[in-house]
Image (tube, rainbow, N blue to C red; front, side):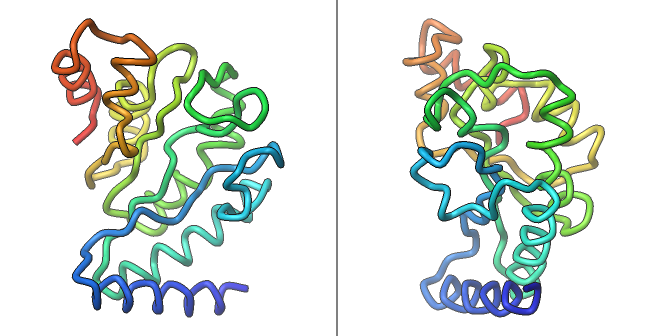
Length: 182
């Protein structure tokens, strides 16, 4: 129901502006694949096409009302064993592109989203927040994204402490910035 999504987007933007917000961390564009994931109810479901269509409508509606959206969680955050987040998502590039990237690519190319939130998890052992292929090569160069990438809560600290990408937090932050995290 695209009309309903547009109405939700308008109310969301109005409430955000009333609170003084210029940016919201929404919508969730993760593809729901495991019902044990505690945030399934926040997603647009298991179908990449449906998530793309609903996400584009929401983003256009919010941004039309002068509030920036940061769709999340880029990318494949909740596909680990048991529906848990923050782990490693080991899958082929084809699966990433055909399922998990579709809503985000639509957000960039169709809705002209101004921000994205990088996820906690890793793709084949490289944290999304420090993944140059994901944040620079695909997002910026291939899709033409010209906005800013935000970190999911403490993803940079997570990349250091849990995923061990660098010996210090400062070095982990530098790796994230060099990869394309703003």
